[in-house]
Image 1 (cartoon, one colour):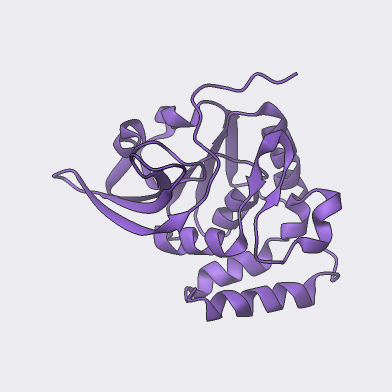
Image 2 (cartoon, one colour):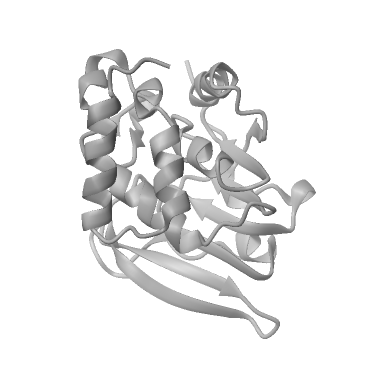
Length: 217
């Protein structure tokens, strides 16, 4: 890979540490994944600025701090199997692929998934499996999962995704606040024998989690 962004990448990792990201494995994963690969050419110079950027199909690539924070809250181990709902550019899946054994990722836009798969192949990320599907349904054929991450805001915690978690498994996702206008909270769910433990983490802003597979022209 090019050394073009080395200094910007170092500065971003230092900034993430100052913002409270302390998991060395997560920081190392972000350092190893070239964010510029997942960004449209017109925004490439902003690859290591700490904000979200637009991608195709009206979607976004998340702010690096949010990627780091959600990943840290997942507490991923190297022998785990993770599900990502909302492949988008593929950046979050690429980060997860550096931390766990296998990543399964689903995306409702065929265009986005096709481009993401090309990026995975170019970076030799062979532990990512993907498909076009309704993210609300998860990936039942591959369940149960140790970890689930959702990168679009649900109106409530999807029960089908909870059911695809192992007992003791963790899911991190944005959830709309009932009765509010666009307010969302990042939520961590831990599945237990008795049900779930829910922890509200911080306010966020994500695109909505939409049912079905997108129709594209």
